[in-house]
Image (cartoon, rainbow, N blue to C red; front, side, top):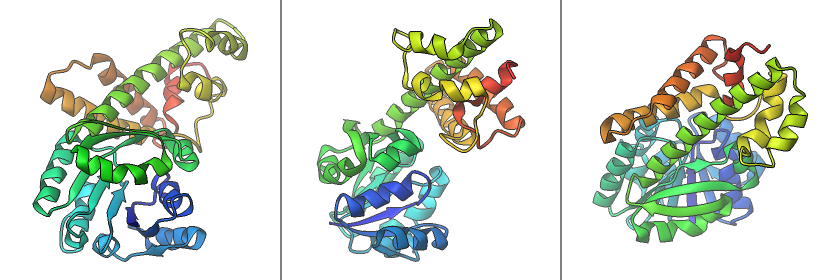
Length: 290
């Protein structure tokens, strides 16, 4: 297949690489920074394009993973946007963590052009992207999902159609709400243990085998114990963006997210301490254990 990938950040860069190396597809990439696109081509092969439209021309599927709703609109719409270049019958897949409102909007705009659309945010972090082991939660029409799935499976551990357009984004919101709560609980537990003078490694070796076990516990306890949060993982500023999307959606659907709102403010405090790019386990930093 002819495939394009737009957005070569920490997630998109390796995801696009899998499409060429593992999938054997004809891949064109676009990135706002042309130097990053050139670097990708040098590493993987394929081609780079100067605009989203140029990248999309002639493609069977275009995937994108950019920053937020406005970033998505900036690469999709306009004379140089994806929709100006996509042929009828192609599929546009959005891996960006964005709003459900945007997903429904894009579905309608694509349908007007005879193009399929799937909102497909991912979970698994940078390691999941590098290893091709992402969880992909999708919203859209079943026919569009079926056409896209063989491509998405190249970098997926699990790829599931949840429901109608926007359902993928709503599922990602649930994912982020759950992660935020887990990290706050784990932070408080480890802080409690440190104040009590316990050997945290020994404690984790026991409680990680029981009902308290989680991916966050097994993969982030050491960083939390050592208070080292820089240079890896999912950044605080990205989590705040995602939690903001969750809180806005909750205003629309009537859900109550009291703990999520509090944790978002805790992350605001972390940012105030210079931690915008720290991993999300840095909630520990405001618990007074250093």
